[in-house]
Image 1 (cartoon, rainbow, N blue to C red):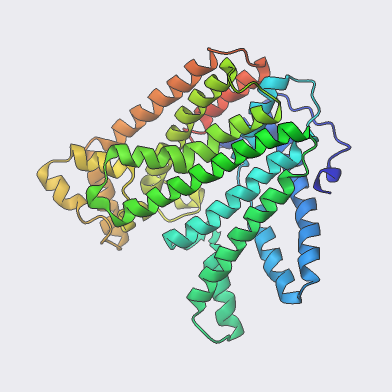
Image 2 (image 1 turned 135 degrees about the horizontal axis):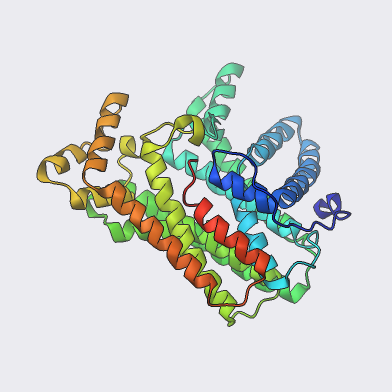
Length: 384
């Protein structure tokens, strides 16, 4: 079983000195969660090794497919969702509860995240993820190299959809390995299911927005942020962790986590909006200006349209039609000149303030409070 890989390690995660790094998220995660991330990665590696072996018995090609799915899961990432879930749990149980009992549940969130990323890359026709070819592009390249019949791109998309589906099933299977009371696991499952439903809802609104940009608005863009990102990145993982700890659903702590999670999650997405236009590709692992190339109706672009002069609005109407790097850079300048970037930065700051105020409304383990305070800032000032 996956949790056997770490059952001998009663991990006690405590603050340390932040590692020297240019990425604030990595610095805070290193300070508060080094042992946690190690435990999550070991749990995932042990679980996936057994799953790949099992699927290889069906057919050698199936083993290769499963290994590709495994590599998507283990190919880096900050482990943000398990981290927020961990502190949601630790904020309830305090510092003495051993971690291995809930590690499979925390690690399952990373499998759910991979499901969402792989499918999102197909829907967005993205070429790269974390500096590497996306799953569908890599599968298409293998199809071409092998000289197979049929459309390589169509094949690649089909394989990526199946990789995402498999990761969703794996997440369910790994979650069941958590050693918590069965009645509590039912509550955890309800929270987990709600997180998945809200993720799908947010993803649908994201797709709809790209195809109905003329009827989009700042409010609808923020609704996408709330359900596509805030729910499954911060808010629901926090509540998921609290459920693992057996927290009372009506407690002030749950209300505080809900407020904090929504505020930080929206700020997280707003930072993504800025990085999607102004991020350094060497840091983000994705080309700069992709959102302008596709005309994605993010809160940033909707605000730019709202604040623009007539001349600026005419320039912004070209979003979704430009491809040349120079044209994209010019559009990015127009967006900045409207004042939208400064407005989004204020929105991020306001939400971080709201999140920190929420933490003051409930009794939370002191170390967890410190970690969540640091993560609220780090997750919203990151460069990737």
